Amino acid sequence: MTRGDRTGFYPWLVWGLAASFYCYGFFQRVAPSVMVGELMSEFSVSAAVLGNLSAFYFYAYASLQLPIGIMIDHWGAKRMLVGAALLCGAGSLLFAKADSLTMAYAGRLLIGAGAGFTWVGTLKLTAQWLPPKRFAMVSGMTLMLGMIGAVAGQAPLAAAVAVFGWRDTLSVAAFVAIALAALIWLIVRDRADDTLGPDIGEQTAGLLHGLKVTLKNPQSWYAAVYGGTMTAPVLAFAGLWGVPYMMQAYGLERTEAAASTSLMLIGWGIGAPLTGWVSDHIGLRRLPMLISSIIVLIIFIILIYVPNLPLEGVQALLFLHGFFNGGMVICFVISRENNKPGHGGVTLGFVNMMVMASGAFFQPFIGWLLDMNWDGTLIAGSRIYSVDAYKVALFSLVIGGVVAVVMALLVRETRCRNVFLSDE
Image (tube, rainbow, N blue to C red):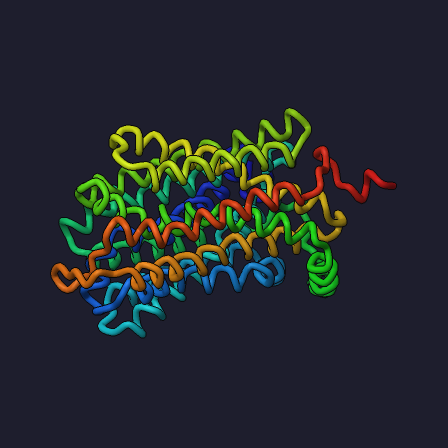
């Protein structure tokens, strides 16, 4: 076996390195959730500004989703992932050394821009190196690695921040990204000897035409809005506001609060591939989407608005919320099946952009609502928000949950087949 064929261990090594970078991107995505107090105090900012700071990751990530596929096809996944990892490293180091809010914004923007290449880049290498019959399984494995990164960005990161401080911890994280860049550069090849690259001119023309057709199709919007509103609690609650909420509502230490909110991420990592398997097995898309959205909405309402819940019950609800939230992954499949086969790539890019845009919107919006309901309490220069303030702010996610249910009702059932091929 050589590094040019698609057998043996090497293809899995290629996938493993790319997927490890995806894992790192997820770690950086949720990292601010365990340093809310430090960041608010360090930069003397309100919840709205902190939410905006964290969301700069999503601004860059979401805005790049449509052109990333073309860039990877043009310059190769290896080069783009190396450059992206270096961007993440530079961004993490810039954020760690930031002495102003502007520097911190720039750091998060660079991290988000680099992380934006991880999912598409990993799937591109998977398609080039591994058999097509393993693509779905490996995609699920990649997602699981992402959840491991997210969990690492909760309780373990909180413990590291408590011991070493947030600046030194993120400085170390920067060098991890640089090490990943070096390993990808030294080991990864873009494709095996028996695979061909696409024509970049055809790809660009196809992107523009496919984007126009996709945006004109209401089914694309139903699937994308469903994905965004379903994912919002994971990105906004588990990704930022869940840790300070758990500390305030249940009197937990930061590490305990982070461990609790990470249960939502663990549940999501388990539920997403399982829900996808169930959907394939029963031959239906819309029904699992609808059931998932209804259950997630009910659980979140109980979680935030039912008083005097025992901590063990709250932790169980967090896990179950994440588990049933896994139904959002079907939005990617049903969006492709409701669009012409030749437009699958741009359709996925559009849906993924909308999913990430939900984090860009809800993180600062919840922060703004918290500021609107702040009672003036300060501890060590950091604003402290009451449980009642959180209940008002987090109601925005309840509204999002209702929207998800409506989108699940509107989306067209495909019965696991492309509707355009079925109509022929």
